[in-house]
Structure formats: C-alpha cells, structure tokens
Image (cartoon, rainbow, N blue to C red; front, side):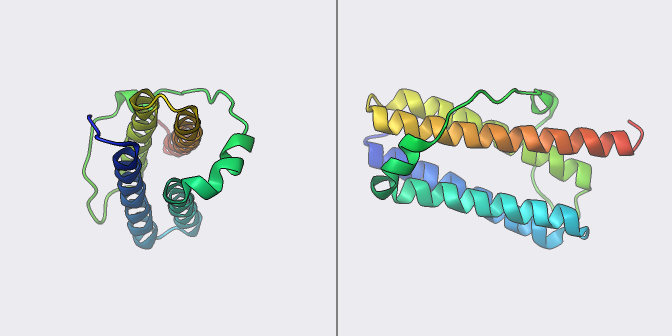
Length: 153
C-alpha cells in the first residue's frame, strides 16, 4: 500500500470505515433477532465515529491524546476463518465469521498505517483505531464462541 500523502492515507481509512458502516447497517436490517440487530447497529455507530475521528482529526487531537491505550487479547478465532462475501439471508454464524474477518483486516490495516507516517500524532491516531478494531474483533469472537456453544459445538 503506497500513499502520496497523509491526506490520502486518511481518505483511504475513511472509505474503509464507511464500508464497515454500510456492512453493519445492512446486516442489522436483515437480522431477525432484536439483540443481534442492536449489536450490529451499535457496531455501525462505532464505525461512524471512527470515520468522523479520521475526517475531523484536527479537532479531535485532544480526544485522541486522552485515549487510554491498553492491550486487547486476541482470541485468534478469525485466523482460522476463510474470507467470505456477504449475502442476504446468510446464517447468523456465517455473519459472525464474516464480521470477525472484517475486524481482523481493519486491525491489520491500522497497524500497517502506523508504519506509513513518522508523525507521532498520526501514529497515535492509528494506534487508537487499531485498539478499537481489536475490541470489536474480540467481542465478535466471544459472540461466536457463545453462539457455537449454544448450538452444541
């Protein structure tokens, strides 16, 4: 991934966040169970906030500086999942697998983008967003484990 400027990096990241918003919004609209629907709606909202953070970086510097970074354990469930394409009517377990993979890729993206700049403020921004995506991934992996346990697997 090569970018000509930090603005190009930010624009790329914004586009990825907007894709995530669209994905979680569509999944939420298709989800028949209220609890899962609310979870996916919340994920869409969190991805909207990520896009806004990137879009309004200059006015969010204080918020980013105040963000407490901490290690998020990786359950590594998504490491064993294959890439999938979303299709309406997908089984719930497949949606969770797909969402885990998407969050894994988002985490990898922000970890890679940290190496694309030497400006500490942008490195911090990408660390914050990597942590957020790691939290999403961990949550989805927990949901998946719980669901599979309920199914007797």
